[in-house]
Structure formats: C-alpha cells, structure tokens
Amino acid sequence: MVPVVYRPEYLRYDFGPQHPFSPRRLEMLVELLELLDPEFAPVAPPQAAREEVLGVHAERYVRRVEAASRGETGADLAEYGLGTSDTPVFAGMDEAARWLAGGTAHAARMVARGEARRVLQLGGGLHHAQFDRASGFCVYNDLALALRVFLEEGLRVLYVDVDVHHGDGVQWLFYRDPRVLTLSLHESGRYLYPGTGGVFEIGQGEGTGYSWNGPLEPFTEDASYLATFERLFDKALAWFLPDVILVQAGADAHYLDPLADLLLTTRAYERVFARLLEGAERYTAGRIVFTLGGGYSFDAAVRVWTLLYFALQGRAAPERLPEDWRRRWEDRLGVRLGPSLRDEEGPPEVPRRGEIERYNEGNALRLLDTVKKYLMKG
Amino acid sequence: MLVRDVMHAPVVTIDAGATLEEANALMWEQGIRHLPVVENGRVVGILTDRDVRLATSELSPMPYKPHTRVEEVMTTPVLTADPMDPVEEAARVMRDRKIGSLPVLDGRELVGIITGIDLLDALVALTGARLPSGRVEVRLPDRPGKLARLAQFFAERGINIHSLLTYPDEAGYVRNVLRVGSLETRKLAEELREAGFEVLWPPEKPWSR
Image (cartoon, helix red, strand yellow):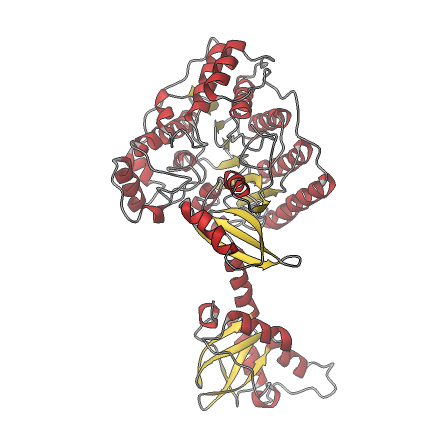
C-alpha cells in the first residue's frame, strides 16, 4: 500500500459555505476512497509547529494569522492578504492551516527518511501563500515546508505544479535557490490569477534557470497540454537530475472547473499522473510526494483525485461510482455528479485550436532555449 | 504618473571638454547609453553611444579622432523634461523626435534622466500584476459616470482594483482592463453581467459544474 496522509482536522480549513475552497470536496473524496478501497487507512500526521511555519513565513505575518485566528481583527490585516474576499479570516484559521502544512511536511519526512517512496497527502497544495502574505485561498505554504524538509536532508527537489493557477508562492520562496527546480504549468497569467508565471520568470542569482513556467492559452485541450507537459517535465528530469519530486496536483485545469479556462479531461490527468510516476521511477528511485490543490468542480476534482489515488497505488481504478454515494452528495450539494469515474463527455469544440497549440508549443520551446545554458553549465 | 516617479538619479555626466575616448570608456564602465554634457554645472548638450560610434566609424566620410572634444560631437541644444511633466508628455516628445532619453532639469539643475527603458518600466507597472490579481475586461459606453459605476461595483464587494487600463474601442466605447485582488473573477463576471455590464473577460462557461 502506498501511504496516504490525512486527518479529519483538515476539514477545519473552511472559509465558509459560499467559498469555492470547500472542505466538502475532501469529505466526498475520503468517503469515496473508503467505499472503493476497503484497505484505505490513512496515516494521521502531526500538526506543523509554529517554528516550522517560521522556516517559511515572516513572523509578523504569522502573528497576524494567529490574531485573526483568535478573532482579533487588526487594521493592517489586508496588507497581509487576510480578511479579503479570497482569503477571509475564520476562527481557528492558524491551527487549521498548520494541520494541512503538518501533513505535507510529514509526507515529505516519510520519503526523506526512506519510510516510503510514494506518498499521497490528501490535502494541502496551498501554493499561493507568500513569505508575508496570504493569497488566493492559501494561508501557510505547506509545499514550502515540505521543500524545506527535503533540503535539510540534502535532497534536490523537482517541484511540479499542475494546478491551473501559477504556483507563484512556491516560485518566489525558492526563486534564488538552485536546489529546487520549480515547474508550473498553468493558464497564462495574462488571463488568470495570480497574473505571474511568464516564460521569462526563470529565477534570480544562483537560482537563475531553476524556475520554469509553461503558461498556456485559455481553452487549451488535452493534446496540447500533454505535449507541453511531457516536453518540459522530461527535460527538467534529464537536465536537473532531482533526488525527489514534489507534485501539487490541483485539478482545476479540468474543463468542468468553474474558476478557470483550460479544457482538460480525466484522460489527460491520467496520462500526467502516469508520466510523473514513470519519471520518479527512472530518475528519483521512485521518490515522489503528491498533494492536492485547487479544483472547484465538486464533480471533476473528486474524480481526478480518485484517479490519482489509484494511479499511485498502481491499481486499476473502477469505472462506475457507487450510486448511493453519488445520490447522497448530489442531494447535499445540489449539483450534478457524473456516474462514472472517467469523463463520459468532453469540452465543447474550440475554434482557435491551431493557434492555441502553436502558441503553447512556442512558449515551451522559448523556455527551454532560455534556461538550458544555466543547467548545462557544468 | 510624473517624470519624477519614473526617472532615475543620480545622473552620470561628462564634461564638455572631455574626449570621445573618455566618454566611450565611461559609458562602457557604467553600462549606459546616454551622457548629458555639462559645462560649469549646466547641461549644454547630450552625447549617446551611437553618436560616438558614428562619429568615430571608419565608414564615416570624415571620421573624428578619439581625442576629439565631446562638445564637437554632442547634440545641442538638448531637449529636456521637468520632474513635474506627465510621463505621457515625455513619452510623446521622445517618440516624435525619435530620441532615447531626456535629461530632467529642475530649473537649471540636472536632477535625473528618463530613458526609453524607464518608459518600458512605467508600461509594465501600468499594465502588470504587481500583486497577485485576476483580470477582468469590461466594455463601457464612453459616457460620464459609466466607469464610476464599475468602480462602485468592486467597492461594494470590498475588492481592491490593483490597476486599471482603459483604451478606446470602436466608436462610442472604451475597453477597461482591470487587475483585481481576487481569484474568483468568473463569479465577479457573472455578477457584472447580471448588473448589465458587457464583460469581455472572463467569458461565460455554461458547461462548468
């Protein structure tokens, strides 16, 4: 069994009933995995300590989160990205964010210590959180905590971010660090939050060449996404030779997602997951950690992450979803849920397909041409 | 945005009596392309790397020698900017006259220089995402109060507008590109449409669920 890290306290990371980053998604997913796999038995991770969070975030920021968490509202919260429409404050916010961060750090520790090769953290992936600022639903950057764990063990890390939004928080936190290569594929910042993630954001100082961004045109479909992903991921492995891979597996590039504009189906996700696992087998002795991330379609996100679970376990995923589970959640959420795990339908026709594919390919080639000399200097 | 907001200072200058060789060395050392020329503390001209190269080129019909004095080759009088000039005014002068920089003078004192690169920085600042933000594009009738209504929409929701770029569209309309402090731009777009605005981005996505 490939270990899964999860505990019910993750569900406390909750911005309220109207907010898209809903803990119901996780609740649905865990229930579904329990039904589909009788052996599903997650490891309960410890909470991240304040000290561990301070390894990534400014203390003045952490103090604001703690105060907001206790219900104290200071005038300067908005300067720290807190109390905004994206990242409102809620009671127990600091503790909830530390549960998620603790889980991702624990997953990294399990792999760094050789207790496991593959680990799935069923939560986290809060890639927008910055050094001194909450952003885009993200309070503490659990991924950065995990990266610190790997770096302390002397491991060089390939960070792969397939969330539809640019992984800006992780990128900026390691922008000058050549021990972490960040690779983010996302809808172009010209159209989508947070606005960054251009081809020429390649790192600074010692870290120049170690930040890779594949911005994709709105309405990019499976074929162009996979071509870009494979081109960049394969080169990142071959040129960087990482010791371990950390993946933020956001599911919001799916065509049903309500927040973004890419048009992936579950077929593309299955290919991406398989490719990541093959890459780990070939280059990192199988060492790879996955987290969840964005994914705001209850229907699509839960199915994508279930496919991820089965891919990690190396087992065939079932075709049909349990009817009683599906009906119960349809009633509870008031949304339609597909009857099968894989997409039965697909996105609508895209009129600009040729232009989109050409632009995506051109960007990937420009990126590789730009960063090559920094990685190949030895 | 004024010239003083985007100019840079202090300015590297050269004396009118210095030689082209010295001016060339100074520009190489400093990695710059424009040298205001001063005499008795006053700006009397400007010399660019291109001026030096063209003046000394073997291909020139009457090449100048390296020890030629700067004042023989410099452009004079020189066009200047005031720190209080609007950036767009400086940009227009530079565009119309096809020049790469303007020394910035406060009275007679040289206080800075503005170059094409500074204008590109200004463009990046005006259009760019300095803070994490989402993009919303709205087409408004070019009439009083329309933009105010749009701003009011965001104000009511407590959503900050980080930047706003407006430019003319077809007759009678203005395009407005906003960068706003929210990831949920599609929800905002839906609400904007319900409120009667013509939203160009993000587009509707009827198939999402």
